[in-house]
Length: 180
View 1 (tube, one colour):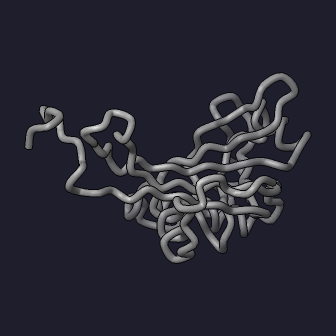
View 2 (cartoon, rainbow, N blue to C red):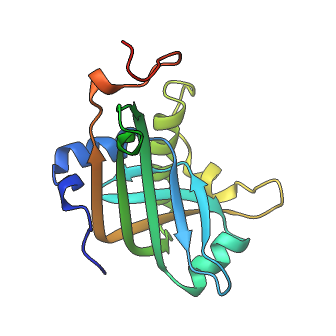
View 3 (spheres, rainbow, N blue to C red):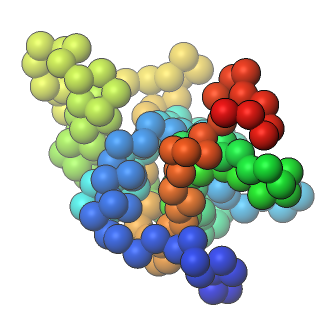
């Protein structure tokens, strides 16, 4: 794997990276397909320094992951657009993390139930009045009849980049170049 080209933007603060991965809501799973890369947006959790997500046990994503367990996962958040009197210096403030690793379907129903509960806690905190039952995870079927599968992505490589927002350069609607 190549080294990061823009080393000045590299983020090595593990606490910041962990918090970013914990708080962000959408990640993009990249899997290998014969003709084109296949990238799917997902809800996920960052837990025990791994990415967890769920989906159908059937379909293109599941088939491609079974055929090749090497995947990528990207999470990115735009923090704002930064202006400059020089058009080429206008830029985006952001944080991004790319993970490359191996994905596997979780076979242990207790672990799968724990992950599904953590997904509910993240995306709909306090909505349900009792914990998720293992039997629900075991029996759940998608609208198309496929059983739910819970997946774990174990990172081999994790890189993070950031371009912090400079508040004095943040673009606001109605701003004009050269005028404050």
